[in-house]
Image 1 (cartoon, one colour):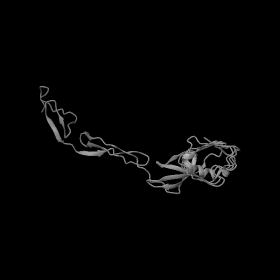
Image 2 (cartoon, helix red, strand yellow; image 1 turned 30 degrees about the vertical axis):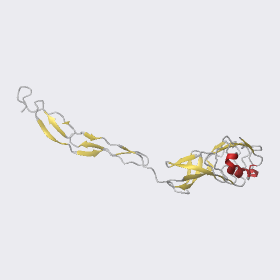
Image 3 (spheres, helix red, strand yellow; image 1 turned 120 degrees about the vertical axis):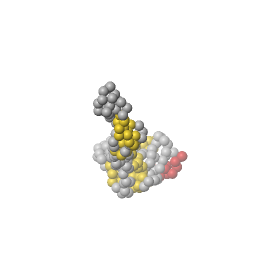
Image 4 (cartoon, one colour; image 1 turned 180 degrees about the vertical axis):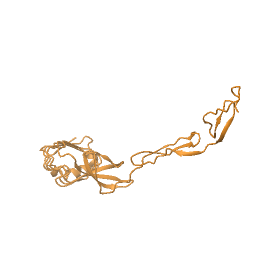
Length: 231
């Protein structure tokens, strides 16, 4: 019996008390019961998925609730690499995956989702299923017949502009070259664009320092009609 209050009475034990190793209950008189080592279990675990982070779980005593160790967040699982040949949409354009490995990931721009696009600002890269892919080519007929198109920006990773890619874009009057990798301009890629349309070359990619690119364009100048190159 407890004599803490000066009279004999049953013990009144506290809620669980604990340290890093043990737990117990204690009366005001000093009496201790149920002193034992913690029985740790793992709670609050969560499996990581493509859509959500995971959690390793907390180490908690199943008797007293003491948290011996707090869990850690587990990053989301990256999905499998999309397969070569897959057709994907990112932003305002549709793409075809042309290479998909741990070291090399590229796509070709197939077309715009909008048939009334006024500025074709080709991205240098896109994100597909959490992976970054370089945009290295503009497909044949990608913008063909878009009479609303006034401007096109050929981004830094473009190597190929496909046949009739901008054909019959009769209001296309400004083309900005950002790529130093352009080596192939296929037949009629720019036929039927605006008369006296201009190629802007702010980085002087078409200059002497990039003779190979200059030749690639010069040899195909008939494709551009009366296009003028401008720095």
